[in-house]
Image (cartoon, rainbow over all chains, first blue to last red; front, side):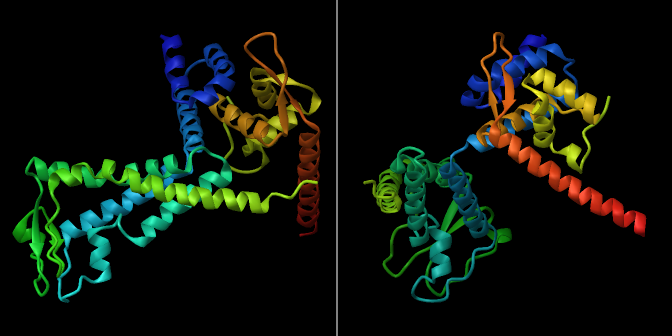
Length: 221
Length: 104
């Protein structure tokens, strides 16, 4: 039983860390009483090591994911009125949080940082962040597909109805170009559809990062 | 059993490990027992190995080849300087504080 608990506790650590220190820690845990205090100390330490081993692109992806969740929740909870003929910037951002110039800059930044720190492929790092950030969009598509979430289209001059009167509904602000509303299947596949773009922006950032590294490197004689 | 204090030098596992290794190499288990003896503090195994990981990354301590599963760790030249600086600072602050307390 003790052996199983120790092996379970060790599995909480990242593999690289386990290869380096796992045997020593296992010996120590087998030699002393496994109290609740010791177990919680090991669990918190393992979480800390996991957090340290997590790549920067994953943290950025999680940050973007929370921004997308906030945009979707605020749209459902209190959709603002659509008063002007041209879609105002704040509504544009609310509707397409992952299509803004800011988002592109973030993906380039991830690529740049990955190249500067030498933490692997820049394109892949940007794709990872994009994939994590798009998870709520895919979930929205899934909820629409199974009929839990509806969407209403609002035209310029119209006021979105309150959540009390319309239930759980996503408000889509239809622009003057009359672009059709979001298709559930497209939303469901959004994480995959965004990958090529994310790879491109990450790679561009990465090539800038490599140029920066070469520029900073002292010229050897 | 002694508990881990929430503040002060005895709450810093890195300082405790460096101090423990000041008189020679030790493996994890021996470091933990030594800290309990000289500081009256129990450092959990997870906390101990997290601190060891950070100290190895900072090149303040280094693992030696061990014959068993437990590797001994030794203080590096950089670690000796860092420990000396930290202890000298603490001594200076402690002596000033104590002197002022006596004057008060």
